[in-house]
Amino acid sequence: MTETQTPRRPMIEAVGLSKFYGPFAAARDVTFSVGEGELVAFLGPNGAGKSTTMKMLTGYIAASEGTARIAGHNMMEDRIEGSRHLGYLPENGPLYPEMTPLTMLEFFADARGMSKAMKKDRIEKVVDICDLSSVLYKAVSKLSKGFKQRVGMSQALLHEPDVLILDEPTAGLDPNQIRGVRATMKRLSETKTILLSTHILQEVEAMADRVVMINEGRVVYDGDVTKLREIGSGDLDNAFHTLTTSS
Ligand SMILES: Nc1ncnc2c1ncn2[C@@H]1O[C@H](COP(=O)(O)OP(=O)(O)OP(=O)(O)O)[C@@H](O)[C@H]1O
Image (tube, rainbow, N blue to C red):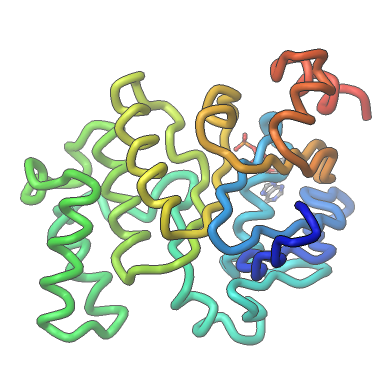
């Protein structure tokens, strides 16, 4: 950042977050922040602690140590206010298999206390953004993985949050579905702050302003994609390998 640029307002903050399961640390002293309007990729091998960190950031699980803040709100002390700003797509989607996408969105809109008019308007908008009109009346259990992912995304966007935490939004999708989800995320990144976990390095190249990498529960890299590539002598796969196998 040059001296003339104003620092971005931090919208997602992990401050010394740790999560212990007995003696095992799933996350240890994780500290990073995502500024307003940034799209940050959260990278790491299987079991590195990405989902655990995201769950602490969203207030879904309590941290053993440290603080999580969304739009300045401590997610343990002020979760309701923080959650107003936050859309969260968990790893396996918050899906109710016997509901249809429409009944599920209505259910979430009611749970958020939306007025009738607001509910209609917001459901129409997220159905459009996530391209769900063809499956609105089908049971979620009968939908393809790609559509299930989009239903999860529509739920995350329903209350028009300005911060999105998306846990592997493209995992298990075919290349066409990945294209669709990436295009949606790219559009959303024009107006929102996004933290997105992924294993796919092309996704990082295509979309992210910055990368936070985690390995064995600890942050091992926080910086831009260009510097990350330099660590791998010009290759992101190499950089990933170097940073996640040397500890
Ligand atoms: N409830 C739990 N009890 C015990 N260990 C857990 C629990 N939840 C997660 N872990 C462990 O914590 C570590 C981090 O898991 P986490 O799901 O955060 O990793 P991840 O980086 O999201 O992995 P993946 O890319 O495979 O989704 C793993 O070793 C996991 O087995």
